[in-house]
Image (cartoon, rainbow over all chains, first blue to last red):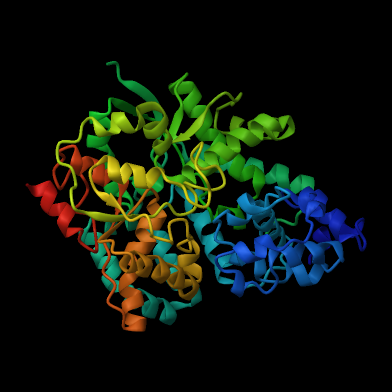
Length: 208
Length: 299
């Protein structure tokens, strides 16, 4: 962690629950969990979670800061919202998992090459550029996220799907030259930069 | 009858040449026959989708969606803001509700919005097209324009996640929503009610980052459709459609299966049943050809 990030959380000392309540989106709900486990049993990728949401909530209360934030568990969330609608205490679990993942990312504690972390950043950077997602550039950036030779392999593996989509007019090769964009893409960039600046200032994040 | 007017938020996947462009095509005939006028919000932007949270914090995501809400209020005042994409709808509705409930977030969002020359005061209702169909048109209204009932077709209604959770369609259950089956029957086809993967997640955006795990989900969905005698899957979701259609070939390559289950949108069924051509129904936009639906459209 950088100095600025360390300073921002110094006042929490060993109270990780308080840190999550103050700094993680919807984190103030964590203490409401009654450990029933319905979320853990409802998750489509449940088996892949190093720690289930139920366990994460207890680990937060137990002050297991590093174990939670360095885990790749939250990055297994597919945003299916099963846990939200089933939680008997109405915790917005999906939002809390997104919030923890984003927090771990911004504190630079999340696993560096975690694939969902990587594509989430590619996706965001892609949409910020023009205000709209460029599906071709997004796909290519994803294929090449692990280097050039892996990228060629990935692209070859998905070649027939890519050609099929082009034939079906659902992937436009000319998007590489720009493609769809918002007229006020510069206003959108400034707007997002301002929103980020406000959030960074509030939370004392080190700019990434 | 006067046309019903709505502010329309198409979303990135519905643009020309994008993955859900055939959905965008297919709603043309449907809206026309049902007297629904969709007025595109000028210069709308991406909602951040279900994966934007990783890099975009809460406020940047609120600002993105608030910009669309503000443009809707400014250019199409008094009209409900309607999305065809569940992720767009979810992000927009969540933003509208969060800003309405938290004046501090509303104030901060407006500081950001000012950079794009906009302000938002609330008061826009974010809806999904399916809500418009069920609540404003009704099942009888959806049935009225049917000229080519899809008789004999057995279709698995795959609702997926985000059209169904966390908001869903009013009056429907999260575990077994029935509206899609009813829509299938409204156009004269048979809904495979025993299809048990109706609300299973296809992996969503993790189809890209966790392909093995997502493809296991997709395989379950498609195999259940086969097991219960369906000849086609129908869905209201662009990402469900793309994932479940595109990755069947990958699954076949890896596991030696022979999956080839067509996956279409409810709007394509309606378009064909309302007399739309193959092209008008966007049926020329598939990797796995929905042959029988194409034949009916061609008659």
